[in-house]
Image 1 (tube, rainbow, N blue to C red):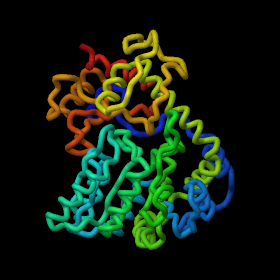
Image 2: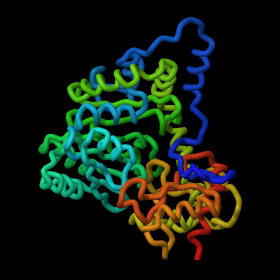
Image 3: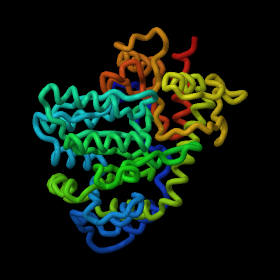
Length: 396
C-alpha cells in the first residue's frame, strides 16, 4: 500500500512497535560500539547466554537443544517449513492469517489450505478439523498446521482447551504443529497473558515461535526463536545455518539484554500498547465499537467528551478500557454499503483521498474480504492523525 502513496501519507499499515527501543538493548549496542577488537560470527546455535535467556522466558524447563535462535521468527518459519513440509502435501493456515504462511507453503511446493476462525478471530478446533478432513479427502496428507495467537490480523485468541485439542488432532494425524506466539506478551486488560501451547499441552505438542520484534520493541535486531522437541528442531537448524549462519552477534547480545530485563521491558511495552488502544477509544470510538460488535465483544460506551472529530491528542490513560486484548491490530469492517469484493479498491481510495494507509483484509486470505487491518503500533502522534483521517469514512 505504500507504493504509490502520496507525500504526507500516514501509515496505519505497518505492524511494528513505534515506541523507543528499550534501554537494555541500547546500552548493549552502545557498549559493543565502544569495545575494540574483532566482531566475530555468532555461533550457529547462538550464544549460550541468549539460548539460556530464551529458555528462561519460555515458562517451562528446557534443554539447550530445545531452543533454536534464528534471524527473526520469519527465519524460524522458513527453516521449519523447509525441514517439515513435504512437496504436494497440505499446510493448514489460518484464514485470515499472516501472509507468510501461505507463501512459505507454496515455496515448499505444498498446498496452503485455509481454515476459518471463530468469532473475533478465535481458534475453533472444529473448523481446523474440517479443513484437515477436506485436505485428506482430496488425497493430500497434512504435513504442518499453523496456529497464530494472539492473531495477526484479527487479534483473536486461543484458549487452553482449544490448544490442547489442536495438539491432540495434530498428533493423531502426524502433522507438525507450529504455534506462532510472537504477540503473546502484548496483552492488556484484566484477562492476563493468553494461553501458550507448551504451558497447556507440553513441549511434545509442537514448536512455539517467539521474537524480540513485538513485545520487546526491537524488530530491527532480527532475532527470533523456535522452541520445541529437539528432533523437530534439528533438521530446521541445518536449513537455518545454510540460510544465514547465525543472527548478527551485536543483535544476539542486545536480545540477551532485553530478555534478561523482561521484568522491566514487558510491562513498559504493555503500557505502550494499552495507551494506543486508549487513543483509539478517544479519537475514533465508533471504529472500536464497530470492530468489537462484529467480533462479538461487549463494548462500553465512549468516555465522556471524546470523539473522532475533537482533533485533540488524548492524554495518556484517557479512554481506558478494562476489556482484555492482545496485540495492536484493529480488524475493522468496511463501512456499510461497501462491497467486500472491493476491499482493496476501498483501501486504495482511502489512501489516495485521505492520505492514510491500511492493509486490505484480502491480503491475509479470502476470508479477509470486507475488512481492513489497522495497525495501532506506530508513534502515537501518527496514530492520532491517521485515525482522524480514517474515521470520517464510517460517519453517516
